[in-house]
Every structure is written in structure tokens, then in C-alpha cells.
Amino acid sequence: MELHLKGRTAFITGGSAGIGFAIAEELVSEGVNVAIMARDQKRMAAAVKKLEKVDGGKVLGLRGDASKLADLERTVKSARKKFGKIDILINNAGSTPRNRIQDPNEQVWWDALNLKLLGYVRAARIVVPDMRKQRWGRIINIIGRGGHQPHPAYITGGAINAALLNFTKALADELAIDNVLVTGINPGPVQTDRWDTLIKQVARITKRSAGTVTSEALFSIPLGRTATPQEISGLAAFLCSDRASFITGTCINVDGGGTYCI
Image (tube, rainbow, N blue to C red; front, side):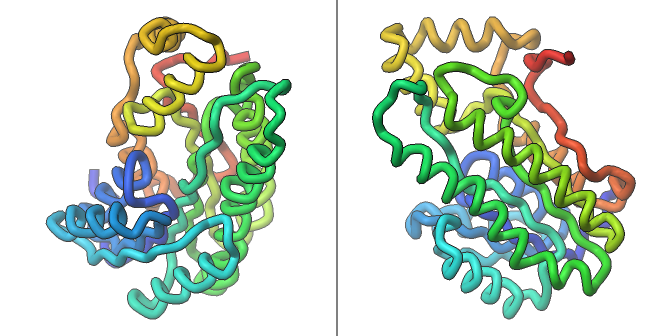
């Protein structure tokens, strides 16, 4: 399927690893010029080196923290200077540790709000004016199924994701008149370093082995396995294209059938 994305420009937060890197790789292969932002300079540089070997668009690596407005403003400005415009925003930076309501560390809540929820809001606010002027834009929020499928050991992450589901729909409704489309992707378990960390956290919280936690997680997925990052990135690329020009305001589950349809 030809997506006709060549010449577009994308800005991806959290683009140095996992799902963010897979999306960057997919878009570069489609001829998109891609700027990735990440906090870890070494990992970001390594990601850029890999992406530069992909035949397609150009790549720019930018060190920045999505929890800091100044970093987002600086990195988006650098991406615009390099590529001339921002057509696509992939909000991907931010992860929330597993926890329960009794956990005393309130800072976990504030950190999650500041990085993931407000990070997505900040990035959108920065790129939206130009997208409106050019009357073309795509904003894709990588969220997670915990927003509509709560779990007591993921209470902070689920609450943040639920807020992002609401934000995605509200923003889509506001921007539709300007042909700026906003969608969300809710990945289920994806085989990344993040997944391995979550398994360890649940094992610690529930006092069970990592093997037991993994088995139970996979049992809840009809396909019986985790996804690969590339199974998320293909959908993201499609949503960026004009093939998806009548899709906005919705969040798509990519979870092997693990989400209840109720």
C-alpha cells in the first residue's frame, strides 16, 4: 500500500527506543523526515545512527525532556529549522510505574502527570498553530489500554491514560475543521524493555515470580503473545497518511484481542 508520505516531517517524543523508535523507523522508510526527541543522549545518538541506515527520509536527533516546556519548545524549533515544518506529531514519551493506591509515594502521580499527560498536551499546543495554518496535520497519541481497562496494580497509569483518551477526542473535535486529525493507539503488551520493567514491578507488588506474572498476562490475551513494536508502527504510519483521512477522534486497541468490548 502506497502511503504517499514522502516529504512530510514528523516529530516523535520518546523516539530512541521501543515503540517510538519503531515508528520513527517506519516513517523514515516511507520517506518522512523525522526528528526524534529523547532524554538519554547516548541512546538517542545510537538510535539516530540506526535510522540513518534506513533508505528514505532524513533524521534529526534532539535531546530533550517532555516534562519541560522549554525543552519541547527548543526541540520543535530545531526540527522546524532543519525541515521547515512539522506535519506529524507522535506523542510517545512517558511511562508510569506499576503501583497501588496504598503506595505512599505521591511523587509518582505528579511525575506521571507532568511527563505523560502534560507532556502530550505541551507538544500538541506547540505544533497545532502551524498545522492549522497549513490545514494539514496528524497527531497520534500512544496511550495504552489501561485507560479503559483499569487494574488495581496500575492505578496511576490507568488514570493518566484515561485522561489522554479524553484529551485525544476533545482535541480531535476542535481541530477537525482545520483538517488536523488526532487519534490514539492503545497498545497491549509489547515486547520492549518497558514491558520487562513492568513485569518486574508487578512481581514485586504482588509478591509473585516474574514467570507467573508473565504467564497470567499472556493468558489474558487471546493471541497468547506480546506484540512486536513493528505491529504498532505500521498502524501509526497508516494513520499519518491520507489513506486514513476520515479517521479522527478515535483510539485503536492493538492488544491481541485482550480488551473487553463492552
